[in-house]
Image 1 (cartoon, helix red, strand yellow):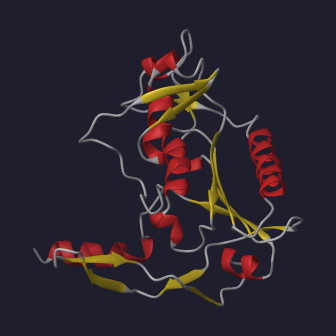
Image 2 (cartoon, rainbow, N blue to C red):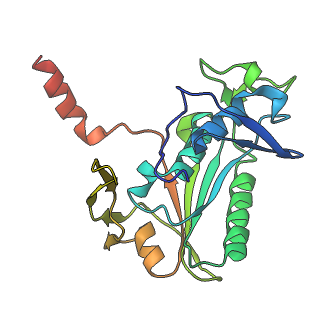
Length: 237
């Protein structure tokens, strides 16, 4: 289970790569590890640079602040960081798995088709032709304009689909303390129930209405509204 692994990479242990079948591999790491390995292992895994990174389908939604904790979203984000359009797909446990997978596939195909005319630029510093298939030039999209979509599919088997923004998803901040058979204290993190505050045009609103949501995410975390404050703080030192 890789829930809440966020964008962690396994830097302090070895990883095992296993071929499951033809063109299918498994890595015993985090979701971000899997995408990182696939994109930087040369032709050992991928014969060429992919047109799209698809992460999921996750068992359970990733709405609102979930995107900061989600390993599913992080795997897609890793692809976008490498200049590849990416999509993360999550479905509720009450949704029909095959129907949800079919919807996720349709959205992924639409995203891929929308990018066929996108103008690539030369790879930024740190990229290498070793990360690509043999004979390919190091050409990627600028990460600032690479689409990164987060899809959430609510319970059901037929859905309308809506473009959304991130909503407000709040959890009970429970810490459960227990003692093991030897009397040593341990604890569990996380509240079981989530609450959605009303946010118009949000992914949480769509989810509560039984509508599948498609939310664009950005790699640019610069907060322009706090730029003046940052300058003022820096000037006082």
